[in-house]
Image 1 (cartoon, chains in turn red, green):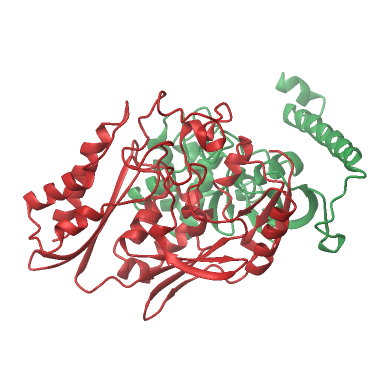
Image 2: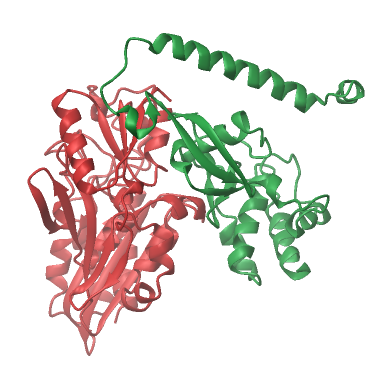
Length: 327
Length: 205
């Protein structure tokens, strides 16, 4: 790794202050929590911060609290802690499962929920120092002419990464919100508004501005009668990103859908909410034909690349399976 | 060749370690020289850090250490290069293969994916720490018994992941063992024997 200065901070305020200060001095600074993802980028010299601001030394930012309004999870909570939490297992349908299927045991023991949501892409061109791709200030998204088997089928262009987080689609299915601290104080926004499509800005994956830090995830209690379904398809059964993942939360009465959330992972540069399919399902009897049509609607407008057409059918089938398992 | 050097009272491993230590010593000196006159305002002397280096206290295998680490050094590099715990291997150095697995505060982690400077006040268990005097840990014994190692490079990582599981779950099912070892690649493909070894170690206790 290129030499840098690690700074252990004791509070969110101190971290925000340092980020602002370094930004003002035109120095590169980066916050880090679990370290499992950023350090790999630094070893490849894709990321070369002059300052590393270590958030793990901030006390009280790792917690899972169950309140009347829902769950609050501190940004430094590890994926293992979320997976093993009894209340999460009982009440948040598949969130524990999503945490438990991310990466590998070693990475879940160190990796945090805040870091998971702020991951950079795992596109092989982005991760390799040999390619100065669009997202790193170059001119080309190499997936367009290169090997695109794991790239986007929805929402792509001019960059075709897929968002790597396993947690984000699952959290969006629950209607989670994200709390961000920054120079102007704190704000809380819906998690789905956190992510940025490449057509808006292809050099970033989220809206975080210099000086801003994710501090908490808030998850409302699922409505009574809701059923959830999570499934992640990957090339092998261990330590892999999703080829396609589906997270659904369905509230139904006598087989008729009242409210549905359908969120896909691994298909787009952001966690992909299939809003049209959700609208279609409302008031419908969820049978095989409706489930199949919801899949068709969700993938309507998909633009597969040279090597990833298989993802379209896979996503449709997964949606169908998820919906039928939820009624 | 190993034997020959051993005959003179130095093993090949000790000899190589000696070379490594020398190289690091040189690196530290030259960095120090290059740095003069370019000191940054932050962080201050009061935080006990110098540019890119800090003194940390940590426990490895029950013994306390106080030492200066470079901020860019990983825990794996600290263990191997500074402390000589070469049982911890560096395979991919990208958090993918698991050869560098150690136990941090009771949980298995990739030591290549943690900075040494973050280990201040932490407690680490490496493969060397499993041995009690001359007696191997039950997981190590079971790996020998079940031919767990083939080429052996992933073995200490596999054993540490198995050990981390048994610390929390003394009687795991086979599925739990497979899941616990899922972050450790074995390019010899010897997974079934590694799983059998961890299961046998659980029964042996």
